[in-house]
Image 1 (cartoon, rainbow, N blue to C red):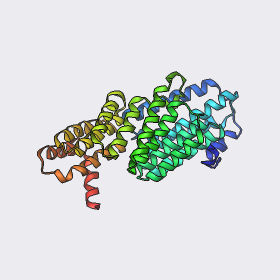
Image 2: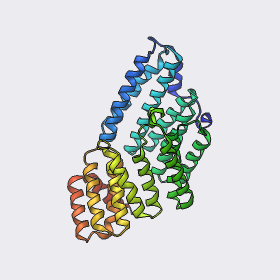
Image 3: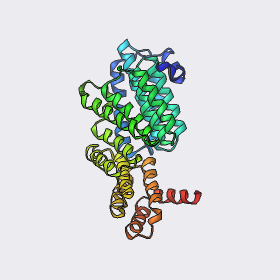
Image 4: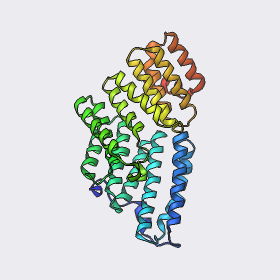
Length: 336
């Protein structure tokens, strides 16, 4: 049950039930949904950066106001809660991108309160697995990610759409792969792929519309890389880079860095540095902390080969184009 994942209380829940002024209409919800789409597009293209502050201000003012007023109908109320959940989910994701996992967890909990109140098991399960699960993976807590994803699988059953279930299973596969468990990882990836193949985009809820074959390929590439299967990971990450879309700049940066890591694992420094340059080029176009972090980790992995010409030239390129990544890698070396 979604209500078992969170305590169904919190500031958003309280304000939604308090009295209000004007009725919230479907037009108000549509305007909020369009605003959310704008913030999401800015996030895809540029990362959190300065937009995180704008989003936080919108949530604390406009969204709180929207939730404090009575809804004109039951459908309007459900639509309002769903769009509010989307704002909080995005704010949590941007907190991850800004290196603030505690804030991310707080935003995700507030989003879960709304899904619990709306009895939306599918969206709640998605938040538990895909958002909290990925947050746990980001913080290197694979066991927690596995628990979240398994709780979501048990909680949603068949109530969620095929793409939603595919995304949940992909997180479970990621957790198993991080632990080195190849058999369950493979089984879960096969199940996720079958579910996504069976999905009808027209029947999917709007909040899972991004989860295309390219995004599943990204998840599979990370699984295969963690399992040490570099050639197979390269095949999947190539599909991800090809299909994710040119406007998803942060995703392109992260996947290009992953591609570089697969070449490094195959002892091909020239290809690793070439892919790394692509990652740096994408990351420099964003204000994404995650993109910088992935390039910094690549630098750390390449450090033992600093005397190699391609690696030395790549290091110089990073210093010139993405100095934040070079500084982060240097700080990590000093701490180590």
